[in-house]
Length: 369
Length: 257
Image (cartoon, rainbow over all chains, first blue to last red; front, side, top):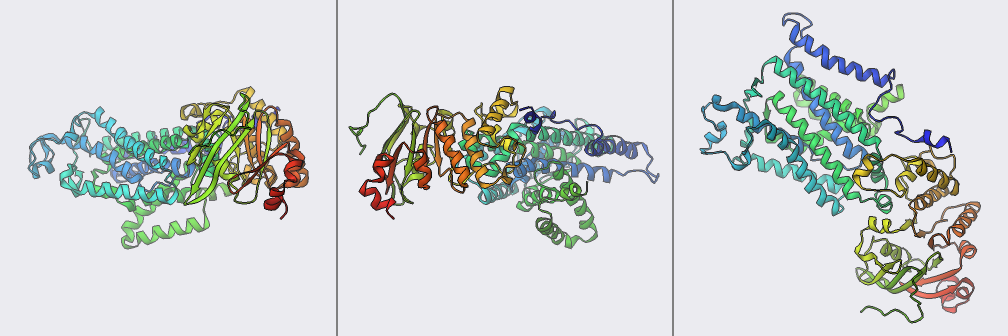
């Protein structure tokens, strides 16, 4: 009897790393680099000093951390619940668009046409804001949209898909179709999101210039903290009974139903949460990168997100962060050094990882440890 | 279309399960034809029949996996199962073991039982669930009962076939069902394991109602009290093992071959 409680996984307080473990020190080192090293080297070391970190690197790291949030969100549904969504780029883009609308409103009369309306609307000869731009001048309402739009879409779509027992590759295909359809919709000028140009030329966020190094650093830090928060939340979720039910759904969904669980509710819940996290990542991405357009919704983008998770290691959370970092790090190098070979390289990584490291790069580290 | 209650069936309040004129067709093929069956509370009923007789389809109908085209299923005398989802039927008190052992291969034995255990199984409850001491005791008892004591930390996928069967039976027991549906529970078990399973089922009868579908006639003979023979989707014969065994129709379609 006494042996039983010690066997229970997750008996350790969830979300806590034991002090002194390798994982604890890695987390501490990452936190130090993000919260101390980056700000000091970027803002306080003078530009001519060899140790100065240019804003290019801050933005690149911030962008990759946004992708890492997406990867963790996708790992929750794919790695744990076994649902491969190939439409997560849509949720990311919707969060980005919600933030982008607010940033467009913040431009005010400083646009080319010096109108209260965003430039593309003046260009289209529109006289007033369309209804879906209502209240987008409010930062808080825009934050609500960042969460609500991907969340409600994922909830409704997920509910009907899971209730109809759409599974496996069929689910993946309809999520691809969903993001593709949304992309076509957003390409239209009449939809009211700037057509194929999307939104760009942002000036301010909360009154601060989006190009100022200090603003960029704050956005970077907010992204780092959000990534940390998303990791802790996800860790807590997967270590809870809810997380074990997700893993059980992945292994034997029918048995889960015959244990008395309504698996539709579980799948909708994790799918919706995952979409909301992607929306938040998109909202952090847009002010840092300075542009959002329908290209973010292209089916290939969503497939690339799945590759990050596969490369890092499914069902590990930290592997997703690692995968997003490795693939995007390689991408920023390759697209500069050998731009025409990047897609071949990406395909090769994916094939190699699938064949030789089915549990991702993280399994190498675990083997070594 | 609905069949009347056959006169010889006494509709007692102690009825655990009552199938009334169930018909199920798949693309024109009638898997079940006007099947009627009554199981009493605490009864251990064995169901036999050749392949394709409709045994698994019958379990599918009871558990809500397949909906009947005609006929009704009542649980505990009055609860109409046709209106309930699979999960609701489980909560009403029906547990099912599949033909092929289905357990959560990547979770531990303990976690398998933890998930199966009777509890609030809604999303929010699961997010904050903690096992009580009582529930841990219950899991430990069940582990001992199905012969998996000491194996709680093992990954379920690494168990032997017979142990997986037992784990699945254990998962049913921690749900505290009133009625257990067991589809070929001793398939792939060694003789010793089969014998232990027979003992286990006999000890469960009385506290639970059991419906056992099995091909292993030796096993059926050790546990059988009342046997129902299915053939081409309806009941061919029903009664004590001795009587059924000597029924010429049963011999013709099943036992004799």
